[in-house]
Length: 133
Image (cartoon, rainbow, N blue to C red; front, side):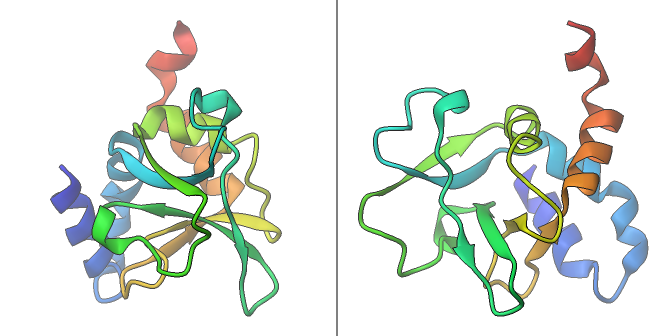
C-alpha cells in the first residue's frame, strides 16, 4: 500500500536499513506524473514534464499522492496515474543519471531522487515476471 511506501520514505533518514524494502515498494505502487496535454492517451506517447533544479540537474516529478503535486506547474500539464511496473520500464527510456532523474515526491521532506541505475536495478529485481512474457 502507498501508506507503507510513505512510511518507508519518511523513515529512511533516521533508519537507512529501511532501504531494503524501498525498491519493492516503489516498484509496485502507482504514481501520479505530469504529462503534456495531448500526450496522455498511451504510456509510450507520454511527454513527461520536468524542470531544472538548483544543482544543475533536471527532475521528472512523480507523486505518491495528489496532494503532493507541486504548485506552479504549467496550466496545460495533465496529471496522470501510472502503475509502478509500467512507469519504471518507461522511465528507463527517459531518465539519465546526473542529467534527468526521477524525483519521488519532490518538495516533501521524504522526497528522493532515483537515478537510471537505481531504476534499472529495481526493474531487474522485481520485473522478472514481466520480462519473461
